[in-house]
Image (cartoon, rainbow, N blue to C red):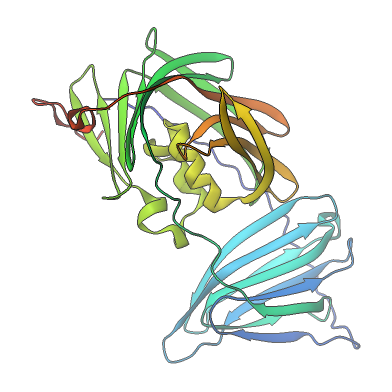
Length: 342
């Protein structure tokens, strides 16, 4: 089976090369140590500075965490860091970046933070981990699905039996869809061109066993795919969203995206006769997704994805019929062979 996936990522970040002096009225260095420690610093937008984070854990221990830079233009850069044995990273901030707030989240270890006295420390608190495994759905039903992505309509079907479900893509014809966009996401400016082949596939996800399979119904092959957000939610990264499990399956993609982006509760609303919790996923001030989660079944019955404020994808679950499903629906059909990597 051929799943064509082309990703072109262009990361844009301006690095200042000028030499800057230290401020006389503010400390130029700070030390963070421990687990789940967060420090927030304020900056004057338009003021350039160099930021250096250095591992000081000692004894061969590593330091890891996340650096977030917030601008006066409501844009956020995010960088993971991992240092050991005195390793360090330097970020050069130009005046045009208009950075007004710097947040350093230290997952573990100890680091020194050198900001040349250009930042004012606001607060430091011990934060609990915020990522959690999504709950199991509930109920037993069969329903049709309708997805519109970049002007292309893709029909499908979903079968749910509590902790396990199957999502079928049922294209009227095999076709290739190319989505081009330039997004301002949670990290940096990213130019993305994504090309994928729409085929007759099924994706089975078992939340209890934390396993998933992608089945090519035409080629009669199958492939076990990683379920990153269930097996290791604390370390889930946005780049994982381009794996087949999430790229071809908007239901599971929503659960994974909820670990990457900020989730804002937006009240309740009826969809297809179902009472739903409405949620918004945001990257800073940018809206990434709106989701309607059925209170009864615990899964999204409507999803809308956005890129730069424009609707990119709409996914809907329709005509839900409560039925008793046979376990064989969620099994790999007899005679299907493992898919060979390409």
